[in-house]
Length: 524
Image (cartoon, rainbow, N blue to C red; front, top):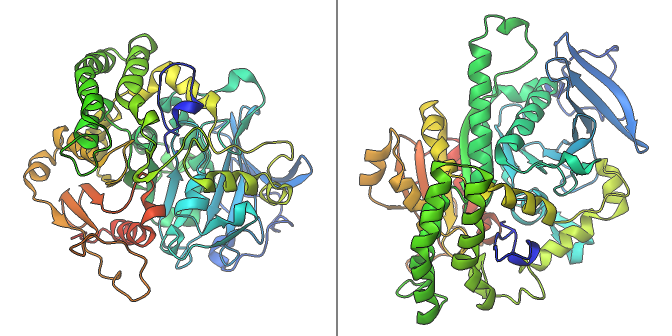
């Protein structure tokens, strides 16, 4: 979720807001529960990996350090009785230079955790917690009853994958910093921390290296995910070219695919698509003729500023584009009384900036002392769904105008597949703009993708009497355009009757889509 204008600076910017080596003893750490299967209790064999029992704010953890990442450590515990008690779960922190701490919460697959892939899920903002994805979209449970409890999510993505939710960058959600100078303001730096976290995670849990790893992100994740993938690929290549590979504690992260839902990836193309999406004759038209004429007249100036940012990326060239384009192109949604994440719905954003009551419920739930304690979160840490200061830092660095689509060709060339999906009722990162930047991007799959006709997204398992799927008048749920075999190497899926957060609006469809994608099965 991109963070709303009311969460931003007093400028007219609308950016809607988102493990481990041999220990000194062969005994398990006392607070870690007995594993359900012996394969997950294996002790890693890294001579330079250290594991020790520790306590932070009176909460017991297992602390892991790795010689090749001297500035990083990871603290892990096993929460009990939360969200989905039927599966093994871990929570804790990546500690960076002892002053920055990134929170994570991991859930094993309900099916075959030893062989199912690992999916890293990131919400956007920038500055919005991935707990939105966990408790409102695709996690093993959904928040309910004003945050007093949770209920099982039958369509959680851990039906077919091990899912890792990470609050990043620092100061997002349960993540925190101990100094004002420890903030992160760009996606490249954020990706460095994510890579270090993954190295420590896989070092402690090498079992999960046996299957693929997938970076999945939403909204501003269209910036995060390509940068994270780029970092992983570079580090993997450096590692594989090192003649001393057998003696290093680092691992080759098995990156298989990148998944972006309703993302902001190529702002130049996507901003220009707004009047085509939101004005007549579009079926999603929400603005009158006067407003549409005003927006269309401002698009050329926005494009000039964005092109200057693309050509000479820096804070000085990109912030002007940020300030002008967000206010000029996205500003009118403030007065439309529409939910910008789902134009089917009305929303008084002066009352509820994020338009969903569940965002407040999530805050209520995660600010409960018993929940914080069980997850290993400091008792004095206040959870917020979206952080204004983080949003401001990224905005004023110009990061939100960077063209992360430019990273995609090299990602594809490395053999990593890309899925872009978009709910058609989302105004903020509309499906037209997402498909257009894919059509314009020059890759090894360009010719096939550009000449491929749309096909209906198949849903073989979604026709039961208890299905919650919402279909269009002809019984369809979405369209697919792809290049490459199976589910495709370069694939776009538009989904009907869903907005910015597809896994919330169409949970069965999202689960079916991801399951097919992870298995590389045809989507049509």
